[in-house]
Amino acid sequence: MNYGGKISGDMQKCIDACIESYSCCEQTIAHCLQQGGQYVDMMMMGPLMDCVDAARACADMITRQSPQAVEMAATCGRVADMCAEACMTMNSDPVMKRCAGICRTCAEACRSLAGVRA
Image (cartoon, rainbow, N blue to C red; front, side):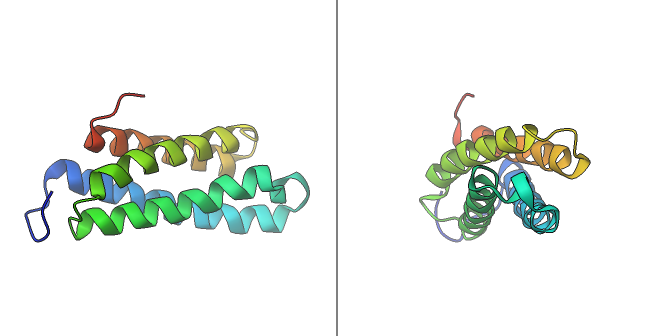
């Protein structure tokens, strides 16, 4: 990847998945704060906050075609998987289940772009 090149289809797919993931995680954080109790445990909030930051950074780096974007995509894939796993511990809550699915999609798009297998 070079600065200023053309955005490929795979790159755009990853950007879109990252944007959807960080937006969903932000909404899920707000949901968790409203619920209280086990929802605000750091075992839940930590992965959500990490995913927000990783997905936003990944989308930004791919958009500007940073030479580090592929590495960031691999990292983002791991972080999004961890977030999905955390959210699935509360999969009886539809907000948490939705977030897990969106994070899994993000992880898959990131791994695909980075050429990493799950």
